[in-house]
Image 1 (spheres, rainbow, N blue to C red):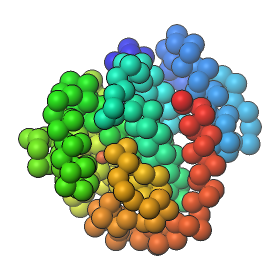
Image 2 (cartoon, helix red, strand yellow):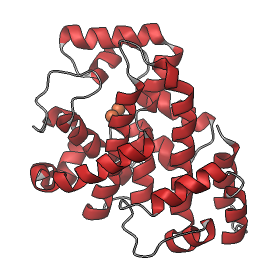
Image 3 (cartoon, helix red, strand yellow):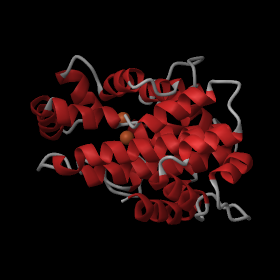
Image 4 (cartoon, rainbow, N blue to C red):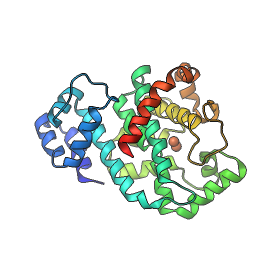
Amino acid sequence: MPSIVTKVNQMLDDPNTTNDSLSKVIEKDQAIVFKMLQLVNSAFFGLREKISTTNEAAIILGFDAIRNIVLSLSTFNFLNHLFTQKSNTHFKVEYFWRHSIGVAVLSRYLAEQAMVGDPEKCFVCGLLHDMGKLMLAHYFPGDFIRVIEHARQKDLMYLTAEKTILPACHCEIGYFFVKKWELPMHLANTIYSHHAIQPGAPFFNESIIVNTADGIINSYYADFLNNNISPGNIKYAYFDLHAKNLLNVWIETVPKWFPTVELLINDAWAFFL
Ligand SMILES: [Fe+2]
Ligand SMILES: [Fe+2]
């Protein structure tokens, strides 16, 4: 894990951290600063004023938003670099990121519009929610292929096949790595529960948002297994019961508002990929 992520996380837990000291640490990684400024000045954030320094970004967006933006950009770079060469006939890394970026953008949008969960936390949780699949594909490729083949043969959803074949699902695997890398708890907990939401669990709202965004993105764009779905039709089996209860009005009205988000998703694909 890039040291900037660990350092920024530690600083944000430290009450003595100031905007200046935080900016100095982030500015050691000019590639991240460049990307961060590009992102916060994009249509996606919809800010009226242009932000030109890390310090300004910290003042206008706040510490926590900066932490989540740095976490998103550097973890994405780290994992993307690690797995760039790992596409095979069963798994296309680009499809994986297209799905994840779509879920990230939609999670942030839903959090803002429905006023459920923190938008910046939802973005990073959406971006990394399925990272357990990357780890599985990388470290246990044989098991990963068995899951995919089982899902295809029996026409099952990926998660159902995973639970039948493996002792741990991608939610638990992602959680394990996030804890190991000492990344924030909102990321660990949301990854852990994005397919099985427990009422009262920490970051319940963020899990609801990511589950809903995941279901909508899987319904609108074929999932990475390219399951035989008709894109554009909501598939209710993708949604957790709690997500359906809380955000049903959003799920029911997707065709009305989705075109707006699609523009943001296209921008984000161009930005990240
Ligand atoms: Fe998932
Ligand atoms: Fe997903």
